[in-house]
Image 1 (spheres, rainbow, N blue to C red):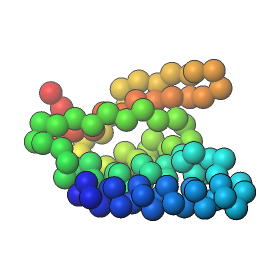
Image 2: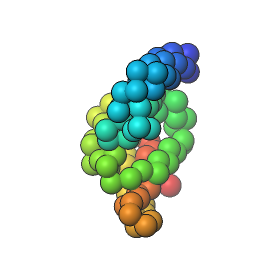
Image 3: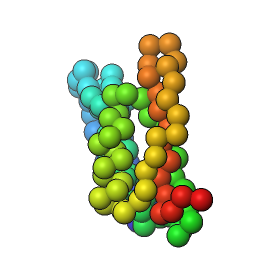
Length: 104
């Protein structure tokens, strides 16, 4: 699983390097248009990586789409997902998600 993630991240790094080299505007978005380029590849790995009592926390911004990420974790990994904090930091709206197999 980690090898698969490393392969995805390496491909992502290559894609970004090519965008920078060609002066493509997409190089200016660290995580793509929704900021989830790497996260979308990581999400399927979360469930299998968690122990039965494991917990995954994620700090995101409004553009990342909390509801869509939560739905993916519920459907793909059967995890329980809860929004545990929201806060505005200057011009960004931040949120923190907690995902686990069971709440403690």
